[in-house]
Length: 183
Image (cartoon, rainbow, N blue to C red; front, side, top):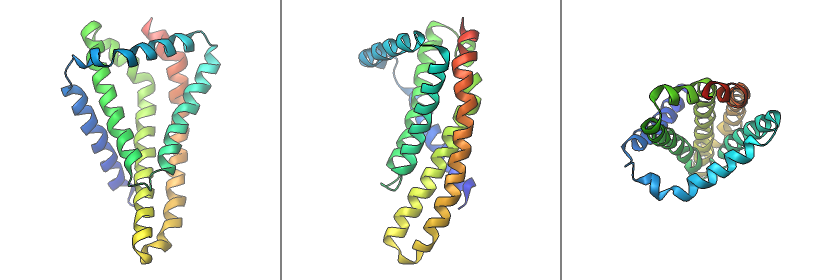
C-alpha cells in the first residue's frame, strides 16, 4: 500500500469539498434552516450534559463514523469519498457563514484547537478506507490480487488505529478547550 498516494487522494477529495463549500451561495443557509435548527437543539442537549459524557459522545461518534466508512469502503469507495468531500464542504460553508456574523479569528478559535487532531485523523482514516476499499474491489475482479487483500487490510487497520488515537485528543480539545476559548 502506498499511503502517500491515498493521502493525496483523500486531501484532494477534502479540498474539492472545501472549495465547493466556499463557492456555495450564502442563501443556502435558508434552505438548511431545519437542519441548523436540529443542530441547535442537539447543541443545547449536549450543553446540558456533564462534559465527560460529551467527550465520550464526540469520541465515539467520530470513531464510529471512521469505522463505518472503512467497513463500507468496498462499496465503490463511496462512503469515504463522500465523507471527505462533505466534511470539507461543511467546514468551508459553516465557516463562511460564521465569519459573516463573527470574525475569522472566531472561526479559527473554534476550529483549530481540535481540528489540528481531527482533520489529520479524518484524512488518515479515510485514506486507509480508500486503500482498503480499492484493494477489496480489485480482489473481487482480479484473481491475482486476492493474495494482497489481507496484508492491505492489516496495514490499513494500523492506520485506522492511528486515526482513532488522534480522535482522542481532538475530542478532549473539542469538549474542554474550545468552549473556554469561545466564551
